[in-house]
Amino acid sequence: MSDITLPGGRIRSFVERIEHLDAELQELNEQKKEVFSEAKAEGFDVKILKEIIKLRKQDQEERDERETLLDLYMRAMETSEPEPTAKAA
Image (cartoon, rainbow, N blue to C red; front, top):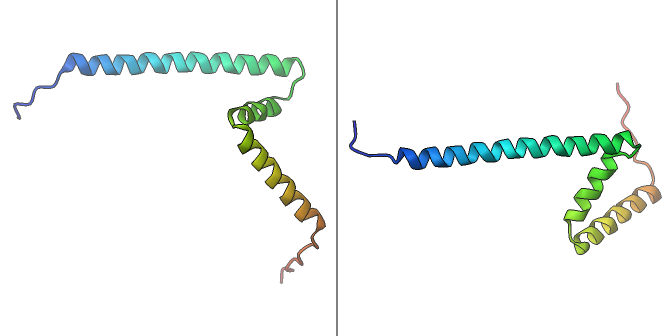
């Protein structure tokens, strides 16, 4: 074997800190699910709430660009002629 000494206490410290953070994340995710369940029970659409949260994470310029492109694409689709579809043999 090699003569390399590993700092076991330091490794344990990192592992325990990460395990603690994982436990906190799990608890936070459970709390988040409870809030969504509460909102759903009050008649709110959870998908829309998630979309709002996603949009609020973006800056205004990014949101404006996305909305502009979405509107442009939708109008292009609505004004175009349907593509002919190939028929199966």
